[in-house]
Length: 224
Ligand SMILES: [Zn+2]
Image 1 (cartoon, rainbow, N blue to C red):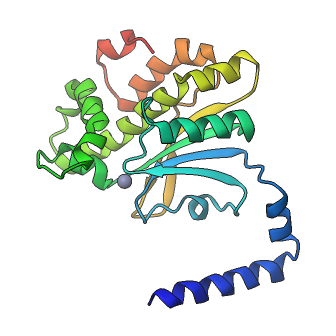
Image 2 (cartoon, protein in one colour; image 1 turned 60 degrees about the vertical axis):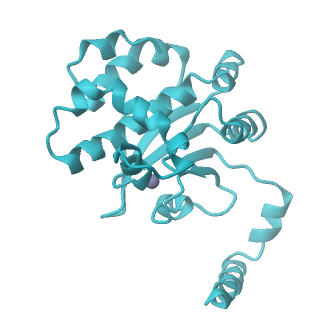
């Protein structure tokens, strides 16, 4: 029942106030999150809950399949506000196994408007096709594509001029790639963190290849 949600809300607010009488008054004054979360809209991946953060501690952007497309004005606005105004220190791109968006992108079926949105995932699949096609088990291949999609979105964020401008003015901001397992509630760090121009230039291609377990030479020579 929809009214249950409003009842839940009243209980939650009352509980928060009982725990910490100044909690909401502090939030009204300002938000000072240190983290920007770029995650999937999937209802099984509630950002604040899975990292144990309260309101005010995580700036959240979610869309189908956790994409960070350089042509998406919504994402760009969020990134600019988070980096330039909130001065977040960490941008976390978080994907998840069993992502319906990733599966839909690869299904070969028509789904409507979402097919346009999901095109970047097909691009990632093409980019890493040489490696992905070696995985015979379809579930495992999709799981690896979920990981590759996170890595590709980390690269998108780390290549964004908003991040580059922050680094140029020596504002610390790290971009991380994580993946969440709906089946056990655990996050995994994909170890593709980018914190500087030198990370981007010197280390990222190698870490990308290591993460994907790919011996493909073209990944090493890819320009980021
Ligand atoms: Zn998803």
